[in-house]
Image 1: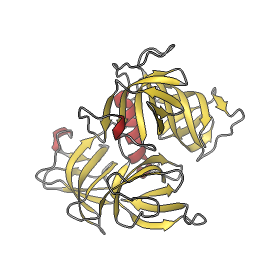
Image 2 (image 1 turned 30 degrees about the vertical axis):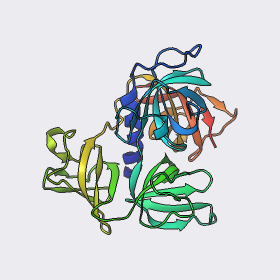
Image 3 (image 1 turned 60 degrees about the vertical axis):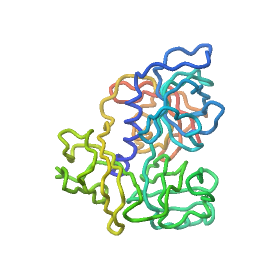
Length: 334
């Protein structure tokens, strides 16, 4: 797994870990559903409650965290079709109850190198954000214009500050399922976000800088380091940086907040459902989906006879044991 893929997909895994074992919540009494121990990660495909991984979840009594904001009053109105979310709850395969909903964008920053995907002019476009390759599709990507009226596939432009949610394929390209334009590029004012592990040798505190995914991050006097042990950023930490974009070419950020996130190594046993692209495929006993190692040796496949390979978009259900998702069911999502 390359560094870029690890930096992004691990954010999704960290959300799953944070939600494991969370209790509470309620809502509609659904026959056959008890407890709140299952973790579900996937794309929002509908509302009327919330549809994720082909299951309708009641979220009336769920708590919400959206881009690290857990303020009272957040709810379904703050979610959009296409957002990749992580739920804690339970279901019977058709309907369920969620006690917690978490959404965190994959990356936020300026569009760079916008171009039509060869052979798909007017249908697919590619660009990068802080070195992360992104593909958007006129039919399959939700373009949210709530912050910038009129924003769409047709108006996407170089320099737009965008928030992107999606799934990584086997080449570490972020296949965007949701994109929102939050700002026009305004160096010194545009707020951006990125995740990853700092370059080797990093040991930086207030008044110092480090490099993350090719971006220079300044730790300034007002940077919130409350979540960083000893207030020192090191190359052993997986972090999320939120800050102000000072310049482009080169990209330099003044950090507003730096948080340490779980790197996804230490899993508790538990039932999960994860959507993503097959990557690192060796055989049915060894591949990854959204950064999670999977063994599908004993799984039921849908459709029957499904042959797995890199870049198939699937939903995997099963139980995580000692860090490996032992799949009970693998369903083709394409």
